[in-house]
Image 1: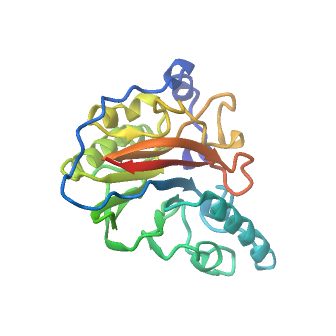
Image 2 (image 1 turned 135 degrees about the vertical axis):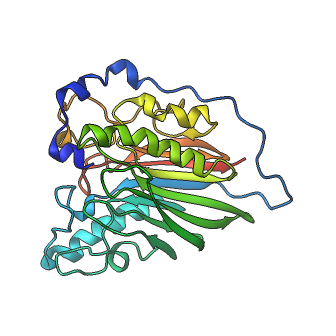
Image 3 (image 1 turned 90 degrees about the vertical axis):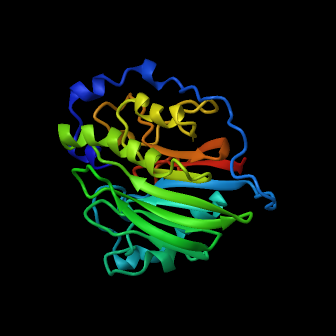
Length: 285
């Protein structure tokens, strides 16, 4: 979400007309993928949160002093407990929670038996927390990028099937070239998982126009934010916007081989990050 810290040109923002915020229409439901005789998988509660490095998005490093660390960590723990997430994808993650370098996993995310964190460079760091064990993981840099963007692919066994949970953060509009790279990053995600039946992608997609999500729908994927159930939900703090009256559906959960329902926003008062929490229920087809 670095673009909102540096500011967005009025030309780009003005192009995001209110009409573009209508929900996008998905393709009809495909036939069940994968087949086989595996036991039915339980509904999965999936959550996406750009946590802003535990610094309200104002820094790429945690800013909480040690004297305030435990009280602040307790707020994060309480919020995470309320979410009841089976999968929690985190953008702008930091391994440190406070300025002393205390472990964020130990102080905030200890309730999850499984976690994987990708590399950090500047504002870029993706992490996945889950109730399920991760059996494989790999980091894939985007082929075209102007920041240190990548996607973290973690494979979990759910109901006897392999589910790829992918956490990402796409390029923001720091330049015209970066803006042009983002649609190519979306195409890379779609192509990379073209032959994979069960995929959930969570992340900060940094879209400037709702149509940027359209390639997912054309490829048969489902989207939580700007989908048919909830419409377009604003996930960004007004203080981070060049135009506070606009809605910015940057954070999303996008899935293949799953039906998405129960879309919700949390941390609406933005007391823990400069992004709201987006979640939904994913049911395997």
